Length: 288
Length: 163
Image (cartoon, rainbow over all chains, first blue to last red; front, side):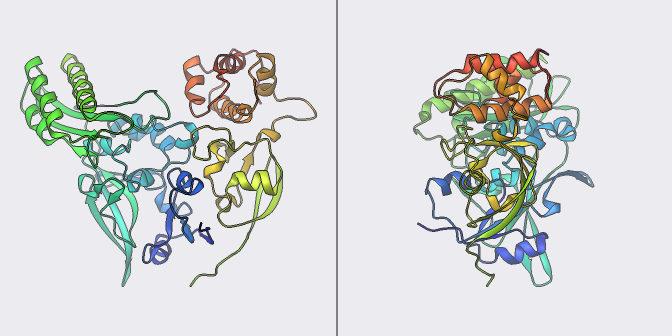
């Protein structure tokens, strides 16, 4: 058994990127994923913990030009309550409010939710609907180097992302959704609280005169990563939301996901649940 | 190489008192409260954020103290179950739990009361749905949820002033 020997809390991003170095240390924010694993000895405790919460620029929601920026350390409870996000971030604020329980929402950060890279991460599908990007920072010859990655490319498998050793996630960026769009998102589990989604699905629609001008679909817990629903989107584009179209969209959704059977649900059940949830959302949108 | 530390000297505030503790760098806030400060009202239940028995207020927010590193609490204000009663008199929330019989084995009670405290600070007149949502991270293994909700709602209905 290993022990944590050192706790570091850098105050600037530059200091953080220098400390992160080869990636051996644990980058620590809310501790709601790392803490349980350390307490239960599921993983070796790191010798060094780098707490990122003392870095001011990693906190809060702000506007930068045409984009909304959410700092990596912004809490689920802050995202849930933020007036700007409630207005212009589609399903993100409601989804943040469905994470676990108040004690966890008061600690869990959006950066941690994404870097933990669970296929069930509750903020991932809403961010797919926003076509969001994440910003990764590392140390370069002349200070901090930043790059952006689309959310759909960030996840590479269960628990893994394209974040390289030495890189830290600094923020999430997206263009606010216009008032002409509508978003729906839901997750399914055996109880409303404290539930890792058995399956989740979301849809963003922009309709004009009853015709879908633009659609984005995303799925959670039904593939090795959160997944964008390109086939379902293609079935929606340019269509009216008739019963026939909705049937084709949900069939495409069931077809393009790749769920597994595990302790929480069977693969076929997950396919069914995705179709039912998405069908309900589209029926609601058709009636709106 | 950065300096390797065996223990940390931490100063923070617990229940209104300035305290200082020496703990290992990996100690949790719960470890610091129970072992270093001997405030054993806060309980270790699951150790993974499922049960809420270790709930405390950290700078006004209810959190699971088993998932907080003590090291990050330097300078913070912490309130535990021991901080609620004053002058030998139970806090209104504690009294409501007693009055409603919302205690069976008592293990979950400190966490339930701290979560209720956070709820009422934010929303003095919660509905039953609000109360359920506020306590969704707290498990009662005796399954005494009905009376716990009754206790919370007895406070919500204006019966007792909340400080």
